[in-house]
Image (cartoon, rainbow over all chains, first blue to last red; front, top):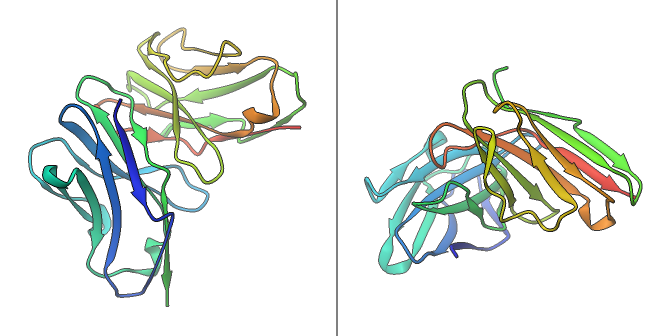
Length: 113
Length: 112
């Protein structure tokens, strides 16, 4: 069964610094990969998704993620953090034949002024 | 409505009681999903509907949990004989495309 591992339950960066949130996947077939964000008191929102069209995927709010098959990774990055990026971020995976997503345990991003 | 709507937003019940949680998906979305999220954890898949039928119910933890979607739109998650371990936020999502799930804000269930 497919799964994802998010390294670091909490990440703290300074405003303007690089954001790097790590996600490694385990899947027996080429997966679909996703990043979702959950702002306080809001539902989960899709940030970006990888479906094999391009290895570098750009999402909303300046985030992007790169699919690296050799490292089984799909890390999320943003060049310059903003205070409004403070939220919980979830990596998710689905096999091509299955609609349901399997989520990681999440990484809470704090942005310090 | 514009988004996925879940009711109630909060439900407090006593151990052993029956609970129903309702989800109203985005109009036209054929796929509907139920997830459960415990504190400090990611969402855990429960069940997925395509139209009226449950296409994948492999995540339901036991036979106390049941979900229906009789007309292919609104869905109800039903929990019988609730236990304290059922306390969590129950999330509903709907989608047109694979993976692009649109989530509601959840129903927080507390079992005393």
